[in-house]
Length: 309
Image (cartoon, rainbow, N blue to C red; front, side, top):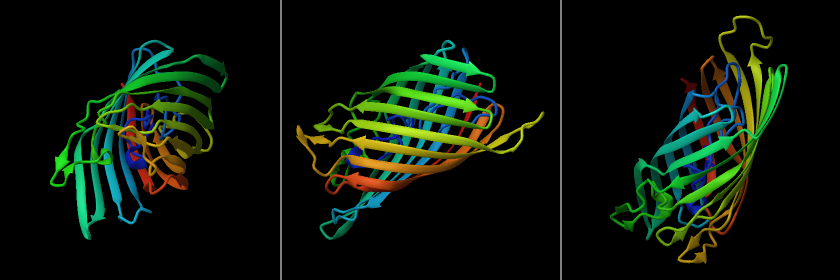
């Protein structure tokens, strides 16, 4: 739903719900690739559950503030989906987050961090349009959902209350929605997503709203020619993720050192079985036009498995 894939505290992209998620869940179809960093419009069969486990490592350490900040987050993101009808599907996503922030303060190196379950995201997707022809299909599906403040947002350490960028939960009710399209053939698949997330205030802090545009191309590398009895398939994946975030608000005022625009290029690979997918990808930032001293991303690594039952 990956993942919107942004928690956006301190203007640092994270694997917490945002269509990871936000968004990162797919329907698993035999011999088909799928996006790694966002959703797909391909259907979930009625009465079928799909599950996804993804490990996400988010490293941010290019700090223009002079505080030599270095933020590392490792998250295990669990997603479960269910096909209610041929057109309606429901999804839930829950991350377990381990966050560490190192910085220099008062001439000393300080480490602050926490770990625990993050916020739960729930959303529904509806197949509004489908166009099927032999060996190809085209689908368009709007989606919408809510992120509930289920994670702890009041953790403290010896320095006091942890900043929002280090809390496992946000404390706020946030809302997201958008539309995703998928075009699939026997050789390749293209997916695109347009999504928006509205964040609300909690504990005197309000993360900036997030707009994102995503694209993904999956191309079958093996077997090159289809024949009877092929047990598995290998897909090369290339994705682009354009993410714009408004400035955060602290005590009702805009934070000048937050928000901005990022563009990631994401190469990846998928090993596709009949009912499961193994996958891995690296999100590489190629553009980071951020405000003030907002912390820049170094990279985001994703590795996971998904299956249906």
